[in-house]
Length: 322
Length: 309
Ligand SMILES: [Zn+2]
Image (spheres, chains in turn cyan, green):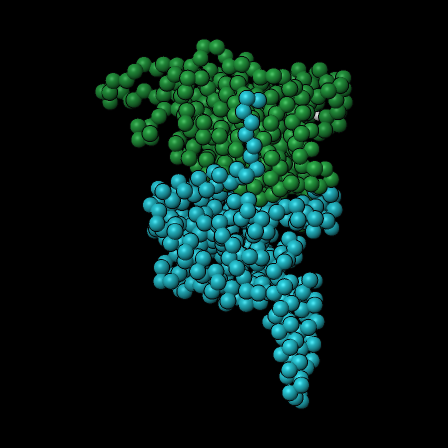
C-alpha cells in the first residue's frame, strides 16, 4: 500500500530507498551483506525513533492515514459481522460503524469510528466526524446489546464530533450528552479502546466504559492541538506547543488516571502492520472483558460510576475552613 | 435533610456583585448606550432589545431564590493545575486572578435555598472565572450538587453559562462531562427532578453534557447555545452562518429546548414546575387508603419511593 511518510520518518524513508536501490539486478555477495547491514540499521533506527516520539509526533502517528480503523479491527478480531445502520430518527451516519459480531465465539456488539482511507471514502465517512445520527445509532445498538446481554466493544478514533450547521440543528450536543449519560447505566460490559484520535466529546460519546484501553501511539484530548493553539495563542501554527501542554499521550493519560491500560503497537506504529496490531490488542480486549464479566450487572454499573467519579482527583485540592 | 425545614432563611453569602460598572453601559446586542442603573433595575436586561446580559453566579442565585436568600455550599475545592499548564499566561496565575475577581473558588457556585417555598439545590456557573470553563473543580462541585440533590431528594437546578471544558486541564476536563452525566443518570433513576437553564453563552462540553440533560431545558432569550462554536463551524463549512443560528429562538424552533423564559418570569416559572414535580397527590377517591394530610414538608419534597433506599 502507498504509505504516507511522516516528517520525522524521513531518515527511515531515505534508508529504505537506499536498500531498495541495492536490491536491483545483478545481485552479489557484497550487495547482500550491505543490504543486511542497512536493514538491521533501519530496524534499529525505527525502534529508536518510535521509542521516543514527542507528543506532536504521536499526534501525527495517531492520525496516520494507514492507521487501522474499526473495520480493520472487525476484520482481524471478530467474525460474522452484521452491520446495523441508521438511528431510526433521521438518517444513517457512516462515520460510526455499528453491528453484531462474534469475539472468540461470543456474540458481542461492536461500535467504532471509521475515517475512510481514500478520498472518496474519507468524504463518505466524513473523516470519522460523526453527526448526531451516528451517536444515536450507537446508543440504539448499545441498548440492544444491553437488552440481550451482549458485551459492547467501542473503538474510538475521531478528530471530534462534526462541527456543521445541520449537526447543530439536529442536536449534536444533546446526542453526545445522552450517550454519555446512558452509557453510565448500561448493564453489560463496555470495553473501550482508543485506537487513534480520541477527539473530545465526539470520542467520549462512545467511550464511557468499564475499561478504557489506549493504544501506545494514540491520543485522547479535550481539544485538538490546533484548536487549542488557535484559541490560546491565536495561532494554530503553535499546535506543537499545545500538544505538549495538553498531556494527550497514552503515558500522560495513564499517569493522570484517565485510562486503564496502554496497548503496545508494533515497532513503527500500528499503520505498518494491521494484523499484528490487532493481535496485540486482542489479548487486552480478552482480559478486559474477563475482568468486567466477573461483576454482576449492579456491581458493574457501580464500578463504572466510581471509575468516572474519581476522574480528575489528581487535580483537586481540598482546603477546608475557607 | 434538616436544612430546608429551618424557619430561618439560609444566610446570604458575602457580596461579590458583578453588575455592570460605570454610569453608562453599552448593550452588546443592540449597541445602545444605556444608563446602568436602568439596566440593573431591569434585572440586567436591555430595555431596548430585551438582550439578557449575563449575570454573575451570585446575582443569578439572588435572582432565583426567594427573598434573594441562599446558602453557599461545597466550598473549599480548588484546582492544583494538574498539567502545570502555561500559554500566554500561567494557568495558576489565571486561577488566582479569577478567584480574586469573582470571589469564588472556581467557575461554579453551589447553593441551597428555596423557590416558592420549595427547597432546591442550585449550581450557577460563573462566566467571569476563565469563561465559565469546566475543569475538575466545576466537575466535582456539580457532581456533589447532583449527589446532594439525590441524597436529600430535593430538586436540582443548574444554570449554565460556559465556553465548555477547560483546555488548561486537558482530558481531565473532558472526563468531567462523564462524571456529571453519570451522576445525573442516578438522579434520573431516583426520580429527582433536574431543571437545566441555559444562558448566554452555553457551548462545548457543557452543552454536550449536563446542560442538555434536564427533565426540562429552559433558555433565556437570545442566548448562544451550541456544541461547536460559530467560528469553528464557519471555518469548517467555509460559509456564513444563517442569521440567528445557535440562538435560543433557533434551538427552540429546532426542538432542542422546551421553552424560552425571560428573566423577569424565571422564578415564577420555576416555582410552577417545582410544584408540578414535587406536589403530593392524594390517591384517587375510593382507593380506601388512609393518607396523611398534605404537610408543607411532604409538599415540598420529592416523594420518596418505597423501593428506593
Ligand atoms: Zn440591547
